[in-house]
Amino acid sequence: MGRYTDSVCRQCRREGEKLFLKGDRCYSDKCAIEKKPYIPGVHGKARRAKATEYGIQLREKQKTKRIYGVLEKQFRNYFKKADSIQGITGENLLVLLERRLDNVVYRLGLASSRKEARQLVNHGHFTINGHKATIPSMLIRVGDIVQVKNKSLESNKFKEIREQATYKTPPEWMNVDLDNMAGHIIAYPLREQIDTLVNEQLIVELYSR
Image 1 (tube, one colour):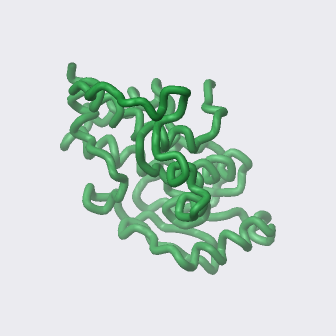
Image 2 (cartoon, rainbow, N blue to C red):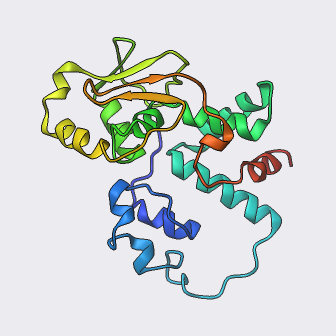
């Protein structure tokens, strides 16, 4: 599988806004976009031509992919699935992305970023309904319980995460039990409960061309 290996801060600069890909660092003065508020590359500071309608739609898709850490083929498959489900395609797409295990771990406050959540899931630190889960793209269902494995609870990493998680407010569609480092999915998110700053209609228009 292909994966992005360059600095993720370049992705924020390319989109011209913070995508919060590095967790707490993005809220500090160390954030790269604060120091270099222009796109990367030798011509980054040069004036750019006005974006076309297609260009705007493409950038919105790229931004959404980068926020959720999804590759092109995966993203297209999510769109196809969203289009086949009853309801508004754009909203269905965001709900599917929110249901990814790595995103749920991040939303629960059990990781500082989606990237860290993917790493922790890959390393086998979580269970779903008591069963080990190591696939970040797994889609969580209503009623599922996502929990840190007992063996992992005493690690310094998760002790640090527990302390940081106390300052975060989880979304309304999940309940969090910090004592047991677990989360219970009580519903699928509504569009107004998803704070990701994307215009999903632009993505629908792009794929409808």
